[in-house]
Image 1 (cartoon, helix red, strand yellow):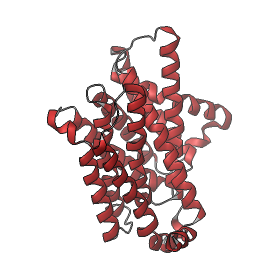
Image 2 (cartoon, rainbow, N blue to C red):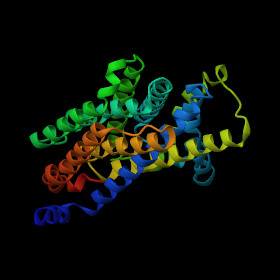
Image 3 (cartoon, rainbow, N blue to C red):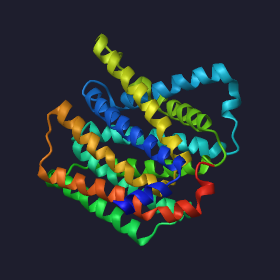
Length: 305
């Protein structure tokens, strides 16, 4: 307990806030995924993906009216556009997948994303990843396999879209980390929303269906609003904290996804799911509290810069 307390004190305040922002973003993203799954029963996945971007797009329009085009000022235009393309691709492929694959399986498979993020963080950003962190993340990945065990008995090719979406998500997180050293959060949010909305709007007329009834309008509005808020929280977290620190926190999506799956779809997890979730949560905490304090001390000046 004393060791735990000592390590907590060594963690910079900015990093604590980054972890909290990221955890809150994961909670909201799980809610968004659940609503998206419900909406795909009545709407084409492309329209659901477009609706997911709608709240962020409207917020950007308001910012442009208030602050002007100054929020679009960047020295990394192509990186900003790339991030928007990756956001559109990951959202579209994941929603296509959950329209076919059970949401519990899709969420579980998506946990290859933190592994991708860690690899890219080490290779692209030269972030230090020690043996202990690699081991903890590997154990967490094995725990994911324990959870999705029932799903592999009836493999569906659509689940591969989740893997591709996870890779696009990981690249997007790395780009976010690069941009956070020079561009404002609102600039990154603006380019992401504008680029993704533009790309998804091109084929939208081919599949568009006008919502009918107040329930559909409310659900689409909630989807758009929560997705925008979750996106902002994640970007802010990446400004404050190392990518390799935040990667294990992404595993909490499994906890929230399981809870939503039970409440909305009546899918109560079995003992293997609880067992795997406990391991994933434990390895995430271990990586944050045990493996990253040395890098925090060495790279403190770069965190949140």
